[in-house]
Image (tube, rainbow, N blue to C red):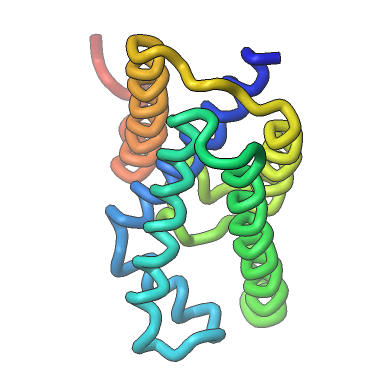
Length: 178
């Protein structure tokens, strides 16, 4: 069971850190995305964006750290945040479809980020994993293993950003001559 909990923590850490990194890298676009929801005044968008980034980076680091605080607390916080994001995304999709016939992608990470595709399905899958992880729990890893775990998370986040860059520039491996 320890390996299952470790895998769930890995997926959650990558998802929240990649999400936070992508939003921080495109901070102005993320703030405009918040304004586009038309729930808060435009002057509050930057503050809300900073709070969301703090929550995502905090959760990502908590999932890297292992058992932090009471069992299930980080999973509960993550599920609450994902439910909020899912509700806002569903609301925005309904509004946009009426006006523009928009698709299912979200613009929080940028148009070409891998995490921008299928946000409702992605969030549902993460919620199911997190609920399972809240019941399993895992202990703290010894220092060398914790370093390797954190390094693997960073590599996955960078891989997602590399995919985004490849889509934005139109260059893929098959386009590069040997």
